[in-house]
Length: 276
Ligand SMILES: NC(=O)c1ccc[n+]([C@@H]2O[C@H](COP(=O)([O-])OP(=O)(O)OC[C@H]3O[C@@H](n4cnc5c(N)ncnc54)[C@H](O)[C@@H]3O)[C@@H](O)[C@H]2O)c1
Image (cartoon, rainbow, N blue to C red; front, top):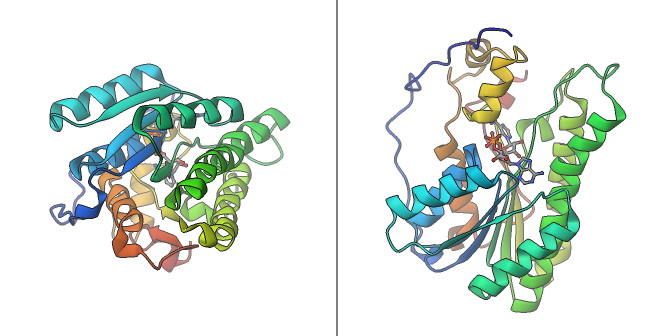
């Protein structure tokens, strides 16, 4: 196994992290997928800090329990529950949405965030690997959007926020399935925004650049990517922080973004602007 590339810890060059406040998020019911790790876990913390009520969804029960325990410790009195499901299973997604409704009465905000990476030369990509990436990273996002969207439409509105990627707006060798799925998420975001504005549902996406999460650690450990090289290619010369992606999610989910729909917000330290 390749030795993991050391990541520049402490995010050199980053300013101390300052957060905004969105009082309107208090009491909102949030269904947060991929909440067991990384960006999803950071989103759970950020929305709990704002007094939202949270249903955490992940395929990994132990990770879910860990996020839940963290929230209960950090935010005493937080209303939080967990549901284990794979977003690639449309029936499990429907059951998870029903469980959220049963527990909290409604779904105001869907953080449609769970996803996997898929890095492989296209000549070697197997049909099973292609299907796995598309099933989770694209179809899973659709199943969650549709199941939550139906409830939002009947309750008179809501917000859907999907985690796409810079690779949904750009392209790269050896990432065909991931790029195609994430480009699909950006397209789905725009289609649903146009279609569901009549139901007062706003639909947006965030497009993170390379962000220091377990997904990245795994790719670095397997030698698929080189952290130091990625930092060097990023104009801000560092990786993103999960908390920074959560901050973008807070804004887009809040009423401060009331007229924003169909948008894919890039948070990448200048990666796309640089043109790689
Ligand atoms: N980390 C990055 O650099 C980066 C960059 C751009 C986009 N993203 C996207 O951000 C999202 C979160 O990524 P992360 O870096 O936090 O990854 P992560 O691996 O740290 O967390 C992903 C979570 O999703 C869960 N998950 C995986 N498959 C699932 C399934 N079928 N059903 C339910 N849950 C499932 C995992 O168990 C995990 O808890 C993903 O959609 C990813 O593509 C990440």
